Structures are given as structure tokens and as C-alpha cells.
Length: 107
Image (cartoon, rainbow, N blue to C red; front, side, top):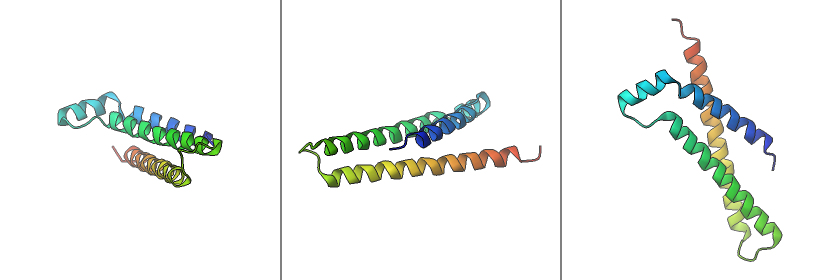
């Protein structure tokens, strides 16, 4: 499995989360008393990472011949990890697009 693309996307998402977690945004979020956007994003990244790690571990166990791991479970976990990664890519794309729209607004 190629981890370079995953690591690059995680780095971009972290950079976006830092921009989103800046002081002015934090003050606005605390005034609304809603969930912290940066924290929600970080939790989602951790969930995607854990899904990928779980799928990778199950795949290794199946390849090693573990009788307790069947092919159906491996394929389901790999597909879940793939879908969650694709979802995070779409979230990143939307965040970048929204950031660019805001930056292009006339002041």
C-alpha cells in the first residue's frame, strides 16, 4: 500500500486545520458554543487513520494464514478504509475551495 499519498493528504489537512483553528475562528466558535471545528477535523483524521491501520493489519493476518480471519472481512475493512479516505479527500477539497473563495472576496 502506498503511504506517500496518504501522508501528503494528512499533512494538507493538518495545515488546513491549523488555518481553521486560528485565534479569530476559535473566538467565534466559543461565542456560538458549538463544537470546535479543528477538534472535529482531528478526530475524523484519527478515525480514518485507525480504519486504514485496522484494514492493513487484518490484511497482513489473512496473508499470513491466520485461520480466524476470512477474506470477506478483509475486503469489507479495506473498502471501509478506502471510502473513509475518499471522504476525507472530498472534505479537504471542500475546505480548500471554501478557503480560496474567502481569500478571493473583495474587502
